Image 1: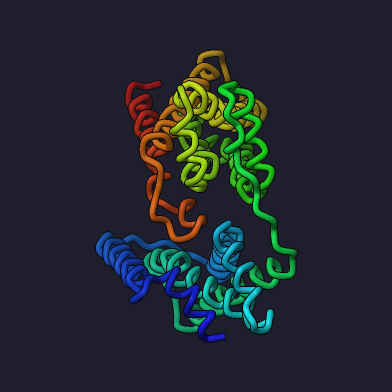
Image 2: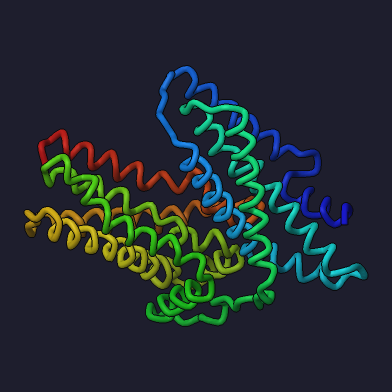
Length: 332
């Protein structure tokens, strides 16, 4: 079991643990920066435990769902050793990776800005361990997923084939749809938070926040084989990039429409100008996201879930927030 654990461990943390050291450095920088800012908030113990549990379980499930990890586990299952040992080592390696690289960053933030005790720290660590363990048990009880076919056979330049491929890809990777549903839920509740400002001038901020839909913006990065294939297509920009951008635009616009409908129902005052503003934000963010994926795909990622937490995902939403701020300064 120890040998199998280190097979995964070297892949996840690096041969000499360099990735773990880099993440520890990031946590120290975050801790030091927030300590200098001397920013404190009150966080109830229950909320702290809930955040740790939900975040750790979600990150663990993403890691377990990564296509390359499923294939590695399938190959290891053919080794002349017990299936139980393989699964335990697999879960232990990914659980350690999740806690040390994902949850550790959350802890660096929370335990810097909030007052805490050693008992709360120990309980938070136990919640994290329990969350990754529960996620691993739930996932490993399911049958291994078969490898999903890609769109390499789609050589036609017709746009509907690209859209069909994107839809089939999302349906086959149901975890990718979770973030979209979360965005729709956020669109429903945002008016309750923004309503206290008693002005529709904050609407562009909502449009900017709703562009933070990572999975649909990394569909090429998460499938390098398809990314290489579409670049070799004749007229690839027209055949793939344009429909891909329109696909992202449709997803963004759907969230904005839900946001506007929720705002109109709770607060009111939505006019045609704000509808056009939503269309512009959705179109601009979709174009930027598609261009980033086409010209600057993410490479050198250890597991697929790392794509979801890559800093690049904040570039487009940050740009949209800046644009929303400019509009606010102009007394939009």
